[in-house]
Image (tube, rainbow, N blue to C red):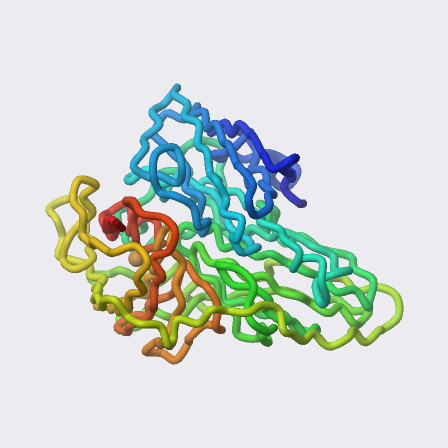
Length: 446
Ligand SMILES: [Cu+2]
């Protein structure tokens, strides 16, 4: 159930990704999906700091697309991580990403980012993992672990392109599909000898769904968040992945017993019932859903405790602050038959407008306020940030992030270091229907 892996050689990885509809395996039969090279998830691209990644994207869809390398600290210009490029049906485009020699190792991903078609393309299957490896990956406690990639998704299941069709109300609350999958597989199981340390790289590739994660029967620790290794391992109890977020965890399988990785509804939508009939997510009953089962075999064996240190984080808590900014997520009135508007600071996305001018080699403090009754995950391209404070006290463990949940009616405060790359990029809500409906802004760093 692991996606195919494509490795760089001699500092280069060159791949062609064909974006196309395809029938993919489903419970002994097939279902319709949007795919990269006929697969969902697409191939895992595995590179090292200093490598050159060249991706030729061929569009065999009947709608425009493009490619975003989510979480990579690379240039947003020209043929690099430039989301203003549009690749029409039948066209192709070659991206070239130069990965800095000091890029942190970690779990990143690629997905379409053409404004207006992002949600349907990602929800229907277009996503793949990018791994950056370095020497830290060969040291304890990571050495001698069994590594697995876990792409979480919740596509709508069907045998035709009808799975792309959603009601206006469904798009406004964010599309939720027909059950939760790991690497496009419903409830896979892993057989693992007791005494094994499992290392999971988990990506939330859903268009809208949050995954509060729970693992019963085994101790587990979070090693990395979006932007790479944490300073020290953190107990992973209570881990929640918002759309776009990643976590790397170590799981100590100590007992010859069956245990489950499960998720439930994310209860962050107080008052949604009053929003003109907008309900919360369809699994609002709060039912627990199984993502994955681990079957421990052999004799019970106590695993060694996981401890650090893992990394040195250059904290921005005491950095000189070159500027502060306020951003407010809002949902406006009904726009005729077009549904609700989704805005940041009262404005809807305009690719021709620059919303934020920031200076290279400065650190800024941003406060993101959520003036709506539903949670929105905030994402910034190119420049990772650190979360300083959150209104609900759910401040993530210290480390580099590129997505953070902004709770309903609450706020988060973060610090961004504008290092290495100038250029034009975007920040947006990672509930992808909200992004497609305008909850996105343009930043220009010079
Ligand atoms: Cu949103």
